[in-house]
Amino acid sequence: MDKVQKVLLAFTFCATALFGATKHGERMEDAVTVLEEVMAAPDKGIPQDLLNKAQCVVIVPGLKKAAFIFGARYGKGYVTCRQESGVGWSAPATVRVEGGSFGLQLGATETDVIMLVMNQSGADKLMASKFTLGGTVQAAAGPVGRTLAADTDAFMRAEILSYSRSRGLFAGVALQGATLRADLDANKALYQQRLTTEEIVRDSEVKPTPEGEKLLLMLSKYAPGGLG
Image (cartoon, rainbow, N blue to C red):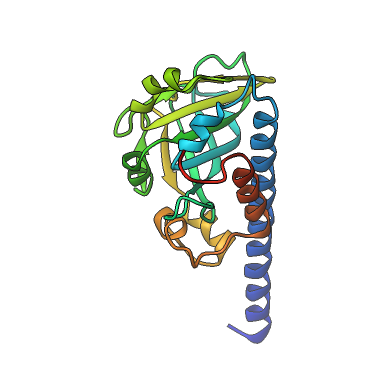
């Protein structure tokens, strides 16, 4: 390989990495917007007491429906978990969501999805390279609006509570059969290292990108800590 070819290869690699980081940065911004818009309407959003109790949060903006496969879904999003102290949130790791039944979506081709991981068992399973909602992980449709603590007890048996928003309609929805898996290539674009979900969210030395920091600030605003 001559010098010119090496320069072109290096340029291509850098351009690809920059494009990847930019693309994921934009998706992270979309995740921030989804969370902000959902939480801005407390009577129609996620109950505050449930968000306070969540161990981890998964946000998938613009989950797409494949027109050629009935019910098929595909999307990328981000997971962040509470720090061991219970205060503050980890750097976000990228996850891919594939397949599964996402309930009535009114014919929408894109759906925003939010999942609350409610206990340590669910958080531990989230660290795996792949798991299935309703299979290896108990999932349920999350309640919406202002909910009394007594009403939320029934939902605490689920490891994951899930919500979807399409065409302006926000509701709890059971994401049965959907798989979540780590996206190592996307993580590399964000952190310049091929890291697993566990390596990102359970290592306080991994620092979020500027867009990731915005997501963590938004979460800290609505769920500052204490697992209360």
